[in-house]
Length: 256
Ligand SMILES: CCCCCCCCCCC/C=C/C(=O)SCCNC(=O)CCNC(=O)[C@H](O)C(C)(C)COP(=O)(O)OP(=O)(O)OC[C@H]1O[C@@H](n2cnc3c(N)ncnc32)[C@H](O)[C@@H]1OP(=O)(O)O
Ligand SMILES: NC(=O)C1=CN([C@@H]2O[C@H](COP(=O)(O)OP(=O)(O)OC[C@H]3O[C@@H](n4cnc5c(N)ncnc54)[C@H](OP(=O)(O)O)[C@@H]3O)[C@@H](O)[C@H]2O)C=CC1
Image (cartoon, rainbow, N blue to C red; front, side):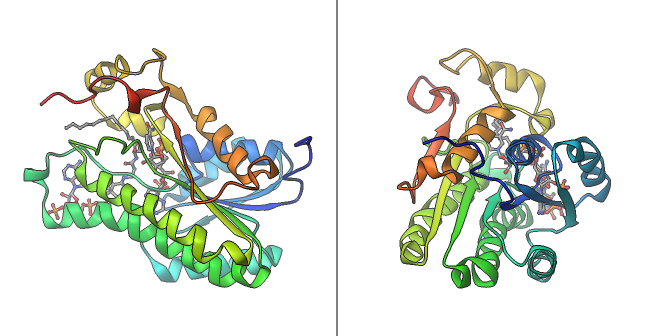
């Protein structure tokens, strides 16, 4: 099978496509012929991303906080009006902050669960109800994190991403006969804009625990997403693909 043209004129939604991993995912899809909509909360960031992406193909942006159901429905209406269909949803938007569990406030815990678990569910349910179930066709890829050994120091996001990991399995079965595939990608430590939020010494220390001895790139994650959304992965659903340089299998990232 030749992948050439697999994504030609496919309509792809990449949440959080204005920076980092989401930007690379959007760029890879555009380069392969797809028409892409990117979303985020920060309009300036999205506009700058569009300037950089537009030479690669047809790309537009919409402001959408994934925690706001009304904004998600408006996004679905925009895509319906513009393209009449959606082929691929990449749930990439997300994030958290480092904190020991004992120090997490109620709001801190809730904001991270809302961002990474509830937001991903609202987006997925809305796009399935508006497009995929009616089309009897759709492809969803969820970006989670390396939660293989839990996530000490970021237990809120560990719990939320484990929720998405399990949601991926449930929906893969609920929607299998409707022609909808859903998989997840679990990035390890990826050199991206998002990583700049973490203390440099912490990141450098953790980087030494990656067996292949380097950090991942945003393109490494994008390649895994394109694979799962492509015909090469047509018999794969409900799966989580780790893109972590083997980190989950070796040594201790966190000391007690
Ligand atoms: C200790 C060891 C840690 C190990 C760390 C390992 C590091 C390397 C591994 C990295 C792997 C993962 C990398 C990435 O995911 S990169 C992507 C990063 N990008 C983002 O995180 C962007 C998205 N994040 C956000 O938008 C926000 O941070 C978030 C949504 C999570 C919160 O936004 P919100 O608008 O809801 O926030 P509020 O300001 O309203 O605050 C809500 C409550 O949360 C508390 N809070 C927020 N930030 C912090 C903080 N930095 N520290 C502590 N608490 C925080 C805030 O105080 C509010 O609670 P209160 O009302 O009680 O004050
Ligand atoms: N870099 C890494 O090492 C790892 C990253 N990840 C995950 O990969 C994904 C991409 O991260 P990365 O590119 O590194 O970091 P970035 O911070 O660059 O990207 C996060 C993106 O998500 C968007 N976003 C966050 N919260 C919301 C929200 N509530 N509604 C809408 N958009 C939102 C942001 O856009 P805006 O600011 O415009 O809202 C931003 O574009 C995230 O889910 C991250 O947690 C997982 C493991 C490791």
